[in-house]
Image (cartoon, rainbow, N blue to C red; front, top):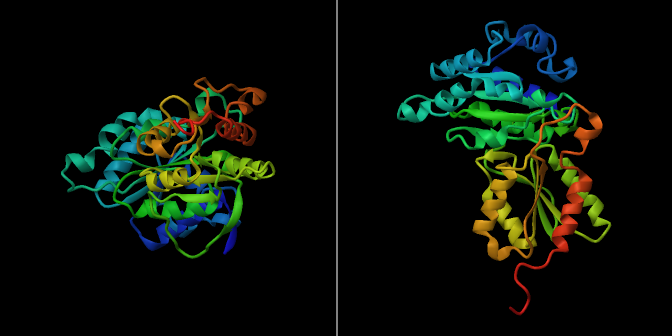
Length: 340
C-alpha cells in the first residue's frame, strides 16, 4: 500500500496498463511535453514518473487542437488494434466531438455486427467548483448516459480511480471517465499491486439503517460527511457510491432502499434529466413498496455556472444540503399511512 492522490492513482493505473500491454497509447493535446513529459498526468514526479522517458514519443502522442480529430483518430486506432487512452482535458470539450462519440464511437461495434471492437478510454476533467465559469464547469455525464454503447465511470476515491481505469483499459467497449477536479487532491492508501474493479459494482461508502444516500462523484465525500454529522442527531445514513453509471449497480441500490425505506440522491450534475433523476425513477418503479417517504434529489439547479466563487459554491450538493434533505425525508408524511 502507498498513499496516493486521486490524480496519482490515475497515473499509476495508466503506467501499469502501458507496461502490461504495448498496444496501450496515450493521445491528446500537449500531452507529450506539458502533461506526460515530466510528470505523467499530474504535478508530482513522485506520484507518476516520466512517461515520455519510459514509453517514448511513439506511445505518447500529441494531437492537433481539434476534439473531432482526436476522438475520430482514437476510434480508428482502437478499431485497428491499439488501445488508446485519450486525454480530453475539460469535460466541456467533449461537445465538439459529439458526432464522433454518438455516431462512430458508440455505434461502430454494433454497426459492424460485433466484428470490430472499440477498446478506447476517454478521460475528461470536470472543473466545477473552481470558478472557471460556464464554459469550463460542466458535468455532462447524464447526457452520455443517454447514448447506447458507451460505458461511464465516475470514481470518487483514489483507489476506485485506479481500479476502474485498469478495468476500462481492458474492455473492448468505449469508456468515458469523468474525473471531478475537486477530488484530485484527495489522498488515501492505494495498493501498489495491480487490481481491477469491475464495472456495474458499486460500494457502500458508509453503512446505515435509517436512510439511503446514493451519491455520485464529488457528492460521495460530502454525503459521508453529512452522514457523520447526522449520526450525532441519532440518524443512521447509508451512503452508496455507484462508481459506474453505465452499467449501474441497481441491485445494490434497491437492496439498500429495501432496508432503509428512504432515498436521497446527491448528484453534482444538473437536476433535469440527470443521473439522480434516473436513479430515482428506477427505485420508484422497482421498489415503490419499500419506500416509506418520497424520494428527494439534491442536485445542481438548471442554471449556468457563475464566475463568482460565492455564488458558485452554493449550487452544488454540500454536506449541509444533503443533511437537510435527509431530515426532510425522515420528517416526511409516510407514503402509506399506518393502518390504511
